[in-house]
Image 1 (cartoon, protein in one colour):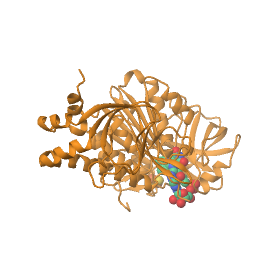
Image 2: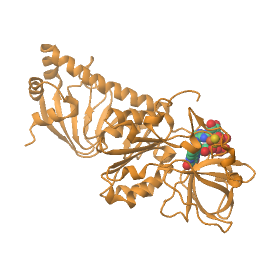
Image 3: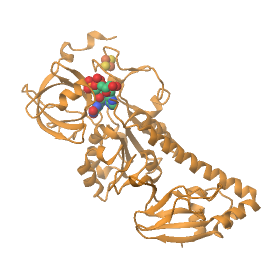
Image 4: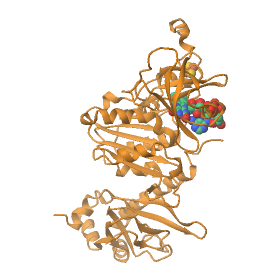
Amino acid sequence: MALAAVAPDVLLPRPFAITRYVRDTHDTFTIELEPADGGGPITFEPGQFNMLYAMGVGEVPISISGDPAKPEKLVHTIRAVGPVTKAMQAMGKGDMIGVRGPYGSAWPMETARGNDLLVIAGGIGLAPLRPAIYWGLAHRQELGRLVILYGTRTPHDMLFRKELEKWRGRLDVSVRVTVDRAEPGWKGNVGVVTTLIPRAGFDPVDVVALVCGPEVMMRFCARELVNHGVSPDRIFLSQERNMKCGVGLCGRCQYGPTFVCKDGPVFSYERVSPLLGKREL
Amino acid sequence: METLERILREHKFFRDLEPQHIELLVGCASNVRFSEGEFICREGDEATQFFLIRAGSVALEINTHDRGPLVVQTLGEGDILGWSWLIWPYKWHFDARCLDLVRAIALDATCLRTKCEADHHLGYEILKRFGHVVVERLEATRLQLLDVYRVTP
Ligand SMILES: Cc1cc2nc3c(=O)[nH]c(=O)nc-3n(C[C@H](O)[C@H](O)[C@H](O)COP(=O)(O)OP(=O)(O)OC[C@H]3O[C@@H](n4cnc5c(N)ncnc54)[C@H](O)[C@@H]3O)c2cc1C
Ligand code: FES
């Protein structure tokens, strides 16, 4: 392993201050961060992640959910599931978080130019896809159709509700939202996100599909896309694996012959389809 | 002009069906419209038709005594509504309620079943296509039951 090639301070987080805290759903929140060390902002490509450190608790990989054209606002959307993310959930404006990054591969936005862009998100998977959507909106003229499909467990778990409404209101974007389970008063679609694919209205030959969500959901979506004539090398998935170093040193995130932290998290379906659904890798 | 024959021929569900079979289907088909809130069918009623939805959305619902009507799936443009007409005891399994104005092509069950009995080649083609719809619904239901977005405690 090329240990010597890694700069000594690569594992050292920079201090960032929380400048804005928004509660998105009962267990999900979005924070905006600014450097507190006098250094510059973190520029990134859609799909990349940072290692976020809750002082004294631990460090976790979290995708960047903000606009790549506005790197001065470093935005992360986090679901509180365990000690580190719960510690972050309990923070507020002015609190400090350690940040290392950006790391990992990006969504292939350049490949999408001149093609239809299909974004399929499940649950909190919409967060890592939001920068790709911002990119798509900023480069709308250079794309064919822009289609966003989003599935959540219940209406109550829906992320970025206002933004979804705003995008839905645009004539040049097609947004379809579905929930697995309706609640009284829900007037939208019910059913899993894969059921939206046949009705999505994209050109299977000229589409680039970006998929993010739980692994089962991505597996079924990718399969459905292939059934609809999309080539596996035009389908991209973002993989989640436990991480420690984030830079290809520790081996924690090994995924078959690859490391998710540096070869991923974004992989083409063509590359990872043999690995999807395997119990231990 | 949008004739029934053309719509059926071009619908993905009937794609590659032989022309004489499309003709037989057209003989059982009619254009229908339902307004918002209207029920296309009710659970337990005899399934005398199935539908190709051309526009609008339909909620498949189950009525529960304590929580009222629960939507289990929404169908929209291009979807097939109903396979109960083909499989005994030919009773609808759900209520189907229109969420907005729905335009569809209705195919008459008795008419089509008679034609399938008379021409097993047509019957087999129809059965294969409905088999696919049933499997798709089953797979979607299983995914729904898997509750993939649930956060592990
Ligand atoms: C590249 C990458 C990008 C990521 N981007 C995001 C992001 O944008 N937003 C975000 O909220 N999370 C994201 N994650 C997941 C996030 O890293 C984990 O949720 C986090 O590490 C959990 O840390 P913890 O210490 O709070 O909980 P842990 O102690 O690690 O986990 C607590 C419990 O939650 C379960 N758990 C862990 N992760 C998840 C999960 N993702 N979903 C459901 N259950 C889980 C564990 O199995 C355990 O039971 C990403 C992960 C990777 C690898
Ligand atoms: S997290 Fe250490 S090698 Fe990927």
